[in-house]
Amino acid sequence: MKIKEAVFVTSNTDVEKCPAPDRPEYAFIGRSNVGKSSLINALTKQNKLAKTSSTPGKTQLINHFLINEEWYLCDLPGYGYAQVSKTEREKFMRMVKKYIATRENLMNTFVLVDIRHEPLKNDLDFMQWMGEKGLPFCIVFTKADKLGQGKASKLIALYKRKLKETWEEFPPMIITSSETREGCKEILQYIDEINDYFVKE
Image (tube, rainbow, N blue to C red; front, side, top):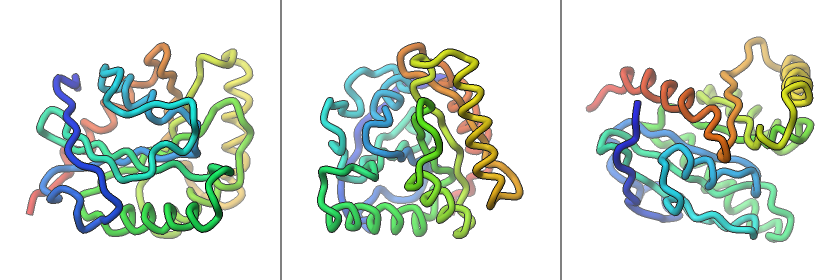
């Protein structure tokens, strides 16, 4: 798949106000400062589609983009940002979880984790919630250009060992870099394959 057009549609905090569920949809989420906006821009080859910032926690709304007039890309608020109050963090997570659990055309959620860090509790907790709800997701390791291949392989192996404690089968995993666009082709191919399973009402 090649992205020829990516257009901003809407931002809101209410799942009921999201675009009509008439196309397949894919959500991107991760800890604040995981490089989510940069990866979305790399995927779409548009430097300013998703707003990047040196300040973590910038995304605080459910943001929808229409891709090739065929499917929606949804940019979700990050979680785990320490400088936002606990009340605000909990509010964001309630909004995000409601969206993921009830959005009927959501085909897959890409859960982004920074490949430079060992498995973190809030990432693992979020994946566990997804698993318990039976919601499909893919783990996307970001910032692969910041590490050598050997170190990256060791950290992914550590992730697999940690997941194996509670998971019988691993979710799909893709290694990415917004700088080199590594993994972008794999993500788009993954989306392309899943799109075939979308049944329009």
